[in-house]
Image (tube, rainbow, N blue to C red; front, side, top):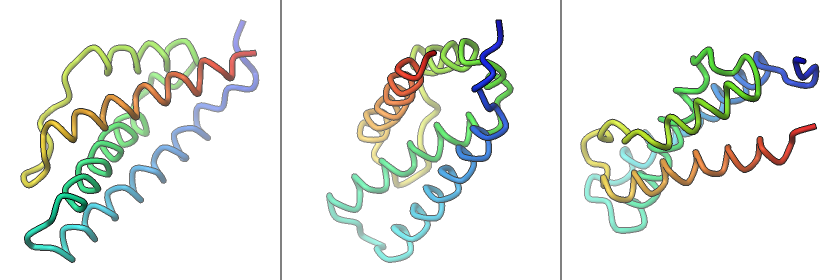
Length: 113
């Protein structure tokens, strides 16, 4: 039986907004620092990973149901992410990529009716 509280379109819009904000922040970090320090490198990796996760989900049809959404997150978690854009620390990016997926899984498992 479908969950009437599940709002796939609302989630897509929300995820699209998060992705756009993260991408904008990546651009701001890159613009302000041609030689980023460790703090900027971490922020760059964090927001690049956030963009990648949320952008993927904002266009993915797997949001039709909570079960399909959680299955898509499990698939993303099991597969390696494509390498980040040039200038982004790969290890830091992967850590954040996995964090955002795990966080979404936990959030949406907790909200089961």
